[in-house]
Image (cartoon, rainbow over the protein chains, first blue to last red):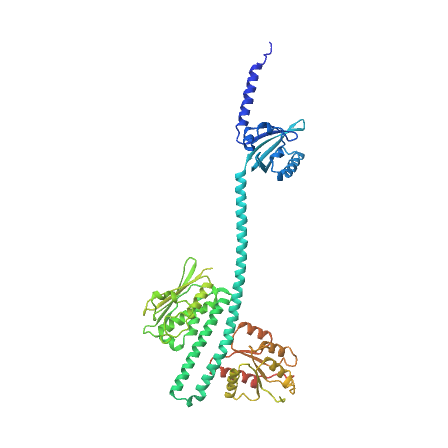
Length: 392
Length: 147
């Protein structure tokens, strides 16, 4: 039986079809596809390459592949490919700035493979794509990152600067309160001392009017002493570092009350202190809070017929809230905003004595603990002062 | 100044405070042999028998020094340091009388070896009482080593 002769015509036809299929595939591709000889000179480029680089086909042929690179990048690219082929890498990917015929720059991402025959490099084939958009986006992101870093650095610098200014201001405040405690108290001590000495030892030489005037001087120097002491306390509440411990608020409220209320006043007031939630805070400073709130409650309650003070507290999700409620003079809610300001008073000294600093001390202490203060009241119907402290 | 026996050396630049202190001491009959100097320099001259006090002897020390802190030029703490760092004078009791209860002054005074720190009370009666107590303690009750 004779072997069947291959149908050459059919084979040729199939080969042509196959070649046609691949040519169409390459020529219609959206990516740049090219081939070079062993020295790197173009022997084939697809139509997209011509369109992107702007060269006619005959201009392209014979050109060295490095001519497509931006001049500043050529040395780097030469070294990169030399290393690739020296190491026998089959495939490589490089991103680089390319230049068109009319000088327009853009970014290419290129995959190159060597074409080998009997262990020899016969040429290279490459597929490349315009990645300008991605590179620019990355560049913009990098610049934005850098901008954020610069802004952060600037912010840190400004914070450091402000911190230094604040530290200086604190030092000045410290020097001021030191000076107040010495320099203002010294002459006042003399005025008070001599006035008292006069009253004690020379009082019988004064007539009634003289004694009255002397008593006015004494009352006023005492007021000034209280003001200076309160101002110093206020500055100390700012300065003192918080010494945070767990505090039994019942014990603290009760012992503060016992300390500030005279035995006579204790007979006249009905006070209730139920179980209060414990809290983390600075005991010395929180004692000031109870002391100021309880003294206020006592002061405004003593003048009334019904004299009750109710202390209370509850735990909420992230904080504990405490209050001191009295049956005293109360206040108009439209004045609530003025209560906690320094030297802010709602009563005259004839009505109720006071420095106008107590509640601002309360507010500072509570704010330093990260809590809040507020008040509710009604004229003649008593007031309730609340403060909250975070549960830590 | 002759080498007379001194009970109290008061170092006080404020003449009114000095007078109030003297009045308080007088009220309690403690003002005998009392010397008042106005500056830190005068105080150390007195203790170490220099300048106008060169005729004094260092052994004839005051029984107690009442020292104000805020003095011009040489401060109260400087005076305290000088007294307490000399073997011959370190046993002289020094009580600081101050208008301030500044913690740093108290701590520094304690570190330098002060024997007491009294905040001058604002009220004259309390002030006189405080002066009486410290005077009585250091002049009458306290016993010092012979050397």
